[in-house]
Length: 82
Image 1 (tube, rainbow, N blue to C red):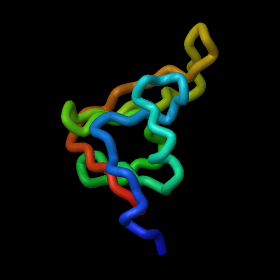
Image 2: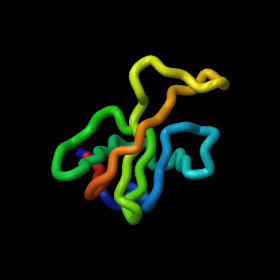
Image 3: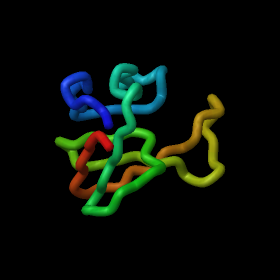
Image 4: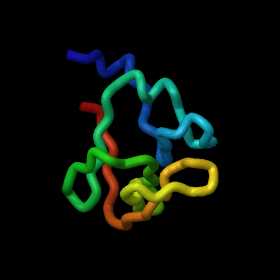
């Protein structure tokens, strides 16, 4: 069981990449879940609740810096602690 008082509020926009300005380390100390259009996704790299999109890695494709290419998926986004 986790104590809900010790969990920080989930931001509107969050990224798992530490180099991103939308990375919040305190959130990743707890397990979070993301739902888009009512279906839970486990491969989310970044999300924005207010704009209604998530970004997921596109198979094995990499950009010139060696980071995975991201594909946007639009819909109703919900973030929650598990």
